[in-house]
Image (tube, rainbow, N blue to C red):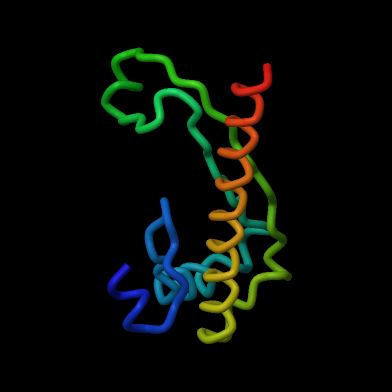
Length: 112
């Protein structure tokens, strides 16, 4: 959060600050070989704080995934500033998706 504040970027809850330079470098190298990028957001309902180690030993969890395909033609990979704006906007959308999922889980568990 401190780095986001220093750079004047939005503070993202439940997400790390995206690394835009690495994304630009990666996209410049592979954009001719792929047609799209998949954005996946996972919202865990139970347990609230799942750990990979528990999943690996067979503990169950309940989750929902939001998956969308972004065509490479919509990703501004050749301009670092536009690419950074694109990634930050994408991560802000992910925060909103998680908020809506959490709200949905709460409403369903409270009223059903």
